[in-house]
Amino acid sequence: MPLESRLQYSEETNSARQTGKPVVALESTVITHGLPYPNNVETAVLMEEAVRQGGAIPATIGIIRGKIIVGLSPEQMDHLGRQAGQDTVRKCSRRDLPLVLAQGGDGSTTVAGTMILAHLAGIELFATGGIGGVHRGHPFDVSADLSEMGRTPVTVVSSGAKSILDLPATREVLETQGVTVIGYGTDELPAFYARSSGLAVDQRLDKPQAIAALIRARRALGLNSATLVTVPVPEADALDGREAEQAIERATREAEEAGIHGPASTPWLLRRMVELTDGRSLRANIALLRNNSLVAAQIAAALANYSTTQLFNH
Ligand code: PSU
Ligand code: MN
Image 1: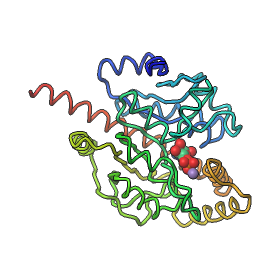
Image 2: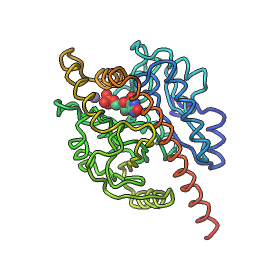
Image 3: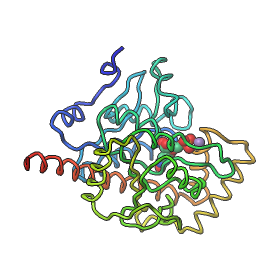
């Protein structure tokens, strides 16, 4: 079966493709495994609104009955979102994609999975909350997000890696994978719920145009690695670094005792964090998802602008 018949574009994303309008991809694992229902579906809608506000067209990516959907409808988001916490939707990274397609099942796409599908669909910008990384105490539980960033050329906008992870180790792996890590308006890698981690980024850049120029340079070199743009959670909803760390340490200890590992680990920890912070980690998570969507759209718009300016100048 040709790829074209597996990929289904929404009307809006299809016309954006044809007219060269800027598009931002959004993932769906955050809907099925990252946030509780109905916050998850509400947040997915808010992220799409933020993309529009930033001047681009949103394309939330997911798999419904074996078809790759580029631009999930509100009904499709609700269909996936209602299954949050039920393990009926497969969380898809690279290894999982062929399985779900072959079996005609429902799948949500992680950062890794969304990167692959966005790239297939010709979408350069992708916004999420926090990428996966190296798990604390489990140096071999390394998220497939990191290796994907070494081999798929898209630009991921996130608030760093989720701080439930081992951030220094994650930072090292990003370097090994050849990922350029940008701090958007910051010199330090953000720590997801909190605004800083004490770890340095490769370069601070403050303007969408500067990031668009970087993307063009990466393309010119023909590099297959990703660019990671990290944006701190908005101040008003940020958690204090020490407070976040205490909750993370406790949640990690409890996960250890409960024997949680593998793909179940991240969803379990995120859920426990919400309880331990009386919902404040959820507020921070939603705020950063919206803000990252806005920033990704601004970069996509700058990139599209750049291309047309260049066209007219030649
Ligand atoms: N960002 C969020 N919440 C999430 C995720 C990202 O704010 O739940 C998801 C992403 O889909 C990411 C995944 O790829 O968590 C990482 O899972 P793992 O550590 O099992 O690779
Ligand atoms: Mn993992």
